[in-house]
Image (cartoon, rainbow, N blue to C red; front, side, top):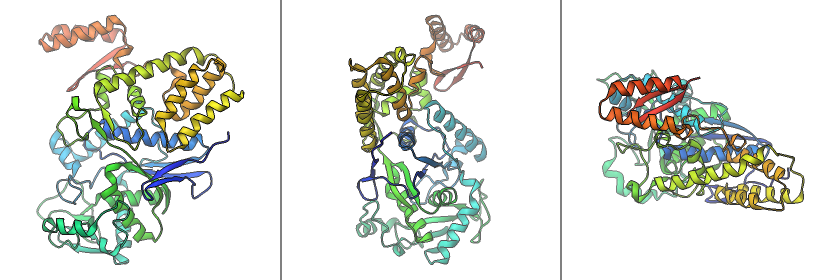
Length: 476
């Protein structure tokens, strides 16, 4: 296939650029993964969906993608200013479990959401706690080159020794210093300096701590990504991705420490996904775990949505733009995907090869949209227009849908397959039983609730009750 060059918006240059990998045919891509102290909310998941579109587009274009997504299971403090509680310890206190159990639980839950959304597995899932040695070695390298200093609570990176520190995020360092200096930690030289290694409190034993050349402690959040990315992908990446909230602090710090350690560019392209905002009907603002309640993928499933409805919803706005989430918006996306599946179903069994000039014209339009900085809204529009083309053979329509779905990831070839855990897969009898059981539990008629549970079991379903409602799972 004659594939146009990908044009991607590079945060570093603040412009769209033609993508070329450092090694022909191979892309080394690192994506900042979850901090596993709680469930991922759908705003978090939007970022991973955009990165999956990118991965699929690169592979569609013929690249082999070496893809790393890290698991942050230590060192991410509640404040980006290197203060506050470790998020894993906070989660452990919240649930009365060990930090290791918390990390294992929420890593498993994240992987579950990953699979539900039909995201391609990365080449490697590096965990921060498995790479303590590499992080210590990287801090030692920076120390040997004179980029660090020690204060009472840890080893810090001196940002004044990296003159380009503010360029990536467009930071006004001088004015920032004037405004923040009063709140600086004792001994910290510059407001933008950040911790590479934090010391454990002298009078408290932390749940996660390690020996180091500087004393017992734990790594800073930023150092882990640089250490793991360089171990698994090399000193210069082709692409580094994350959410837009990573630009000002986390990714700016990664660039500083990595480039000072190696003397090389850390990444050629930086791509960032926009925030998911709650619509006015949901209260407005950026979706965040700092709020007591947030929307999980399971929340959508409990409300009868297929996880791929949410994937489709994310295609309705460009990945760099804000996306407003509300139940009415999601319902529209569900209707859109349902309509697409209905149109696709009769075509799948008629699939032929893509041969006609007209079919190639439609493929060219689709690839042009994808190559224009992953313009998924435009690509979806092209898919729907193609399906209405009365001059295009039905078999070629089906072939094009399967071809396009390599990027879309909607499982269009399985258009009649029910979602794994969607209540919409139930017939009317089961739906009625489920509603009756919910009412029985509300009225504390637990005998009837148990009877209905047993009926579900006979029909091949197990019910798991949780704080967000009942979850149905098909018995394997």
